[in-house]
Length: 366
Image 1 (cartoon, rainbow, N blue to C red):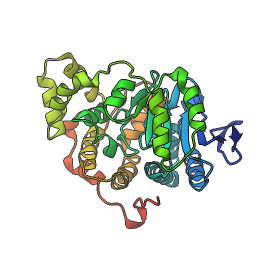
Image 2: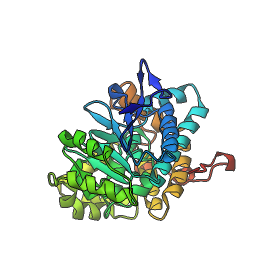
Image 3: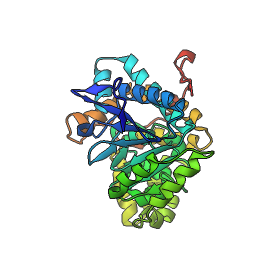
């Protein structure tokens, strides 16, 4: 395996993302295990640059991305860094991070070579953005997937309006509003993953991938390797809950969802209502609209919409308060701007989706 670390960003003495080539594979290792491999802007830029280089390197047949350590693939973006940027009014960083992260998400979706994400461990937020848009998404018995953004006053970004709206039935809306955490079988059921591999076999899988030859259809070659390593795994929960989720979350408004939850006597509905009431009311309302609109959008259109949402949300009180409560002070008692969704003005929700000035709009380059 040859190392390509010269331009990698670093935290302390260690490179925060490590690039290497192993046979036919261009390998990306997210290398901040103590921070659960959270993404920051230098990492986003480094990954983008390396993918551009490897796109034009005939010796690289496919890309593999994974996370360092035993706990996480990538637990999300560096929210604490963005919180600090907001405190010092660093508008340039608040623009640049989301702009370049979303460009990377779109680039991954369009990448002309097989892109294999090994989602072995916690995979949330920004970690979903650098995995779910890839051609192949591999989960293991250690995978824990979630889009928990409404719990910090944000929305499920990195293309959430696109991929959540394309989950079966109302599962994506359920996942996006509640931030529910799911495991490997449910990722497969929700079309968020393509293959399930035992974590103890990841090394063997990477070895087999490194030995491939591209041929006329490298995607078919990679799929064959992944299929050979795929295991059925355990039965998930979403399949058994699907009918109830579709009924409860198939309403026309957020208020109707709450009404359906409150009218149900099942334990699932009662627990879900409790969870949903703990989230930021404005974030829940924005997310509902985001996923509804995302159904009829391309990924690029959805990311442009989400960039508008990001630039409004980072300047609103709920995100600042949510990060304080969950990440900074860790009291887990956020004081949201609104007491409940009944206090959220629909006109305020609509304003999040308004176009930005032309020079501030996200213009995808890939």
